[in-house]
Image (cartoon, rainbow, N blue to C red; front, side, top):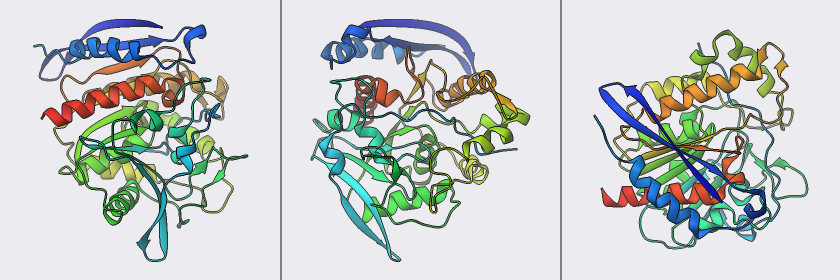
Length: 347
């Protein structure tokens, strides 16, 4: 395993800051081994990362969802929680750990299976690693897809609802299911892709419950501005992927959701931003009114906006990983999530 630290300096609002990002390159012959060396090495770089110095549209990248090479039995755990009004939500919580409970929030259209999947043969998925030392919860939002089945299909473990929905609806569902299930905070949220927008609004809506947040190649609310006129074209492509034709398939009004986030204030909690370095999968170079290169540039620029939410935020660039970093590099997601959880505990 090769850890390649890269330092870059930039001017920041209110003073200068050192942004330290870690490019993680896993050599092919070692990619299937869970390495304790990674955690030790990341712990060393974590200290560096924390040194202080002086017109919207539906927009989430289409990409190839990971097919698990070693499905985790824990993915079939969990319970169907009755939240009232004839609705149930699937919630999978495991272990009584010390410190804040870790909540795993999946990206657009993805159910909780995504945290039990890995591209690397022999690698241990994120949920199964975190549960060794922490209380961990994952859930299926309405209309999201399962992957640890013979064929990808909409989860039948959570009641379907009318679509479209907004981030506020998602936040209300998560808050309700955690409350009914008796899962007390504080929480550290680890959120992938559009799940980052949901987690961000959750932290703003319930700041007393959220102790930290890890953005895993997450959607920034500045994407419509960064993509400009091509954003609408991209949203049309997005709506046609996955199970878009199936009744009840998750559909989020991202326009309204962005406005909901803009109307709140992000709390003073420790965060970390993890970003891919490889292109989104499944996109031709030019398609239906926008270019893949334009999307890549906008996404990378948008990640910096997430970094700027809090001072001294570590930004980890993951060499060799596409959008599904948790499937390519589960060890890294675990190490950074544990780092944020320790920061949250120390506050």
